[in-house]
Length: 218
Image (cartoon, rainbow, N blue to C red; front, side):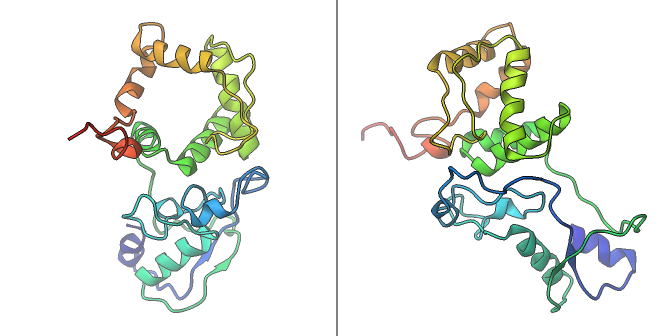
């Protein structure tokens, strides 16, 4: 979409540069295993990615890139027919916007996160939550925002320790009590905005990451 819009703008483009990430702090929590990038479970969390940093976008278990901004820049350059190297540069103040795209609706991204246990989506959504509630655009800020909002909505977050929002960290601690409260709230009447979450759970033997688990015996 970006390439098509740029071409229609009539502005000749000779090179592509990507802006520095607007997500601050470390792009990987220190408790994460870097082998999980190749394993497809996580990628460095930055503000520019294409296909969730998957190296094979149509394979939900494919490895992820450890330099997704550059990969996104190269994808745009290729779509524009450019062979020049992709660089990093901050946009000039008042620069003309040639093209723009937006993410899928929040409900769609939450559904994908849940069905496919997508850790990258979990982390980026948490960063968005932090920014929306006045916090920093960092992995730590995202985790703190999750706990903050749950507390404000009346959930018992005692005993909760979050290093991240995806659950990859071995330092995370979430009591089963809280998980029970959340699912019960989604199924009940106290928090109707949570109800759509019920449709996003992977189904054993049917959908998402449980599609090939607990399948009925033949």
